[in-house]
Length: 196
Image (tube, rainbow, N blue to C red; front, side, top):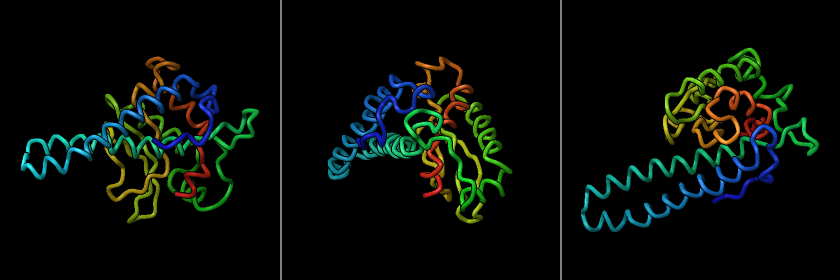
């Protein structure tokens, strides 16, 4: 389990410490633990020729591997808010550069990108993720959603991913995913997004 790149309370008040701690130390860790178990069991299932077990383990690899990768991207996509006393950089969108230009060309402004992501994330039925991605064939940003722990990598480069599972916001925002999504943009690490 990769350590967080900031303290558990660094995203307060937008994502409270209790959520960050549970989300990382329990939820993300569960994906890593299940992924490691699936990897360990796969060679045995293959050697025994147990196709049903191989399929079951493959499903676990996809779900838990996706959960581990998605959460690893998510944690790095956040930073303490610039508005906090921590001298954070979260929420500070660059005034120039490649990301600025891509967002301006694709959406008009970072506010429009945020609005599109909030709308898309709010519309997810059940659990999933909302992503700002770069379509590698077009060098243009677009917003996509993925169900469960599915990865956004099919012809897409993830620039920013936001977890839309209830565990990401329920303790603080109750069932109001819309408010959670709006709040997350105060702690988005745009420097990390630019580097991707």
